[in-house]
Length: 99
Length: 314
Image (cartoon, rainbow over all chains, first blue to last red; front, side):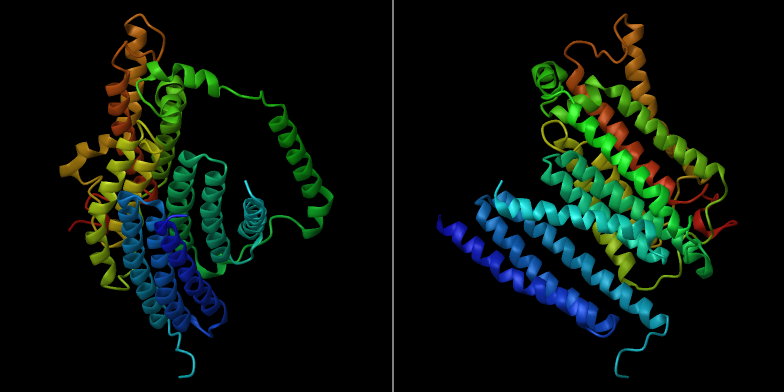
């Protein structure tokens, strides 16, 4: 295995706990706001690490850039979607847990 | 394929079955629609595992994306009391009729798949690829060997759009009140990316997975996003009327290409020698534009009013 494959594999492995914890937060947090918090932060870091890891592993700069572009698009989409969901929940009168 | 591959496939198959059950049987329609969208995404993954990336692209873009948006907007128009579904049949009937009937259908399909001629037509397609005008076998089948099928598929889409438009006016306003200022900004920011990706998929179609259907679906999804972000659809407004012709452009061009061969004394859909490559590119562009606008037209849920979603007049 080359150095690029090692580094790529380690990056992917580093990303997996973030995705797992994000999913755990989605399942276990009490209401919509902390769940969004878990998803919009943790999953994006996890996805970024996995994308960069796969790109490094592929050994091709084009592929790496395409994967990073996918990650950036996901960042924009998930931030907007999280904002939309939270605003809609607030507008419908869902009070945050504990208030 | 290693053990990990088999475990992944089994999990995928189980998840698909469970999601199909949820999509058809969940009492809450929102739950059912979300299950259907996730089903579409996992189905795309299944097509990737079956090494059919072309179908995976179409499934993800049309099956999960465009159909999901359609179902969600349809759900939005139902009154809240209609969102809980009445069961279409008695739970007991499942054991007596539906499970045996479904089992028999599954058995028949398995038998049919088993009896399929083993290597199929793959070798014939590969042998004729040199004269097809493109390098990717799927595109060669879709736009050269079986272009008639593509013609009929676009015809079905056009018929669906005409039927929906003839059923009534698009609802006014087309979209609910703007929940967030981030959405218009997102639409403006991302629409050029949608156009770029659609053009890339179209261009890729000649030598790799891609082509008119995924490209059209991506462009249509971009248009739907713009609509949700508050853009005004000009598809029907009188000053831009001619643009509506793009709806039927794909069908007209494919039909013209098919009939031109017949008029020149060749077979239906036989392209003149040496022109297949450029002709297929032309047909792909026309079909892609049509598919994009047709998916958008379906999403409008009715014939748009003269001046967009604002209803009567400006």
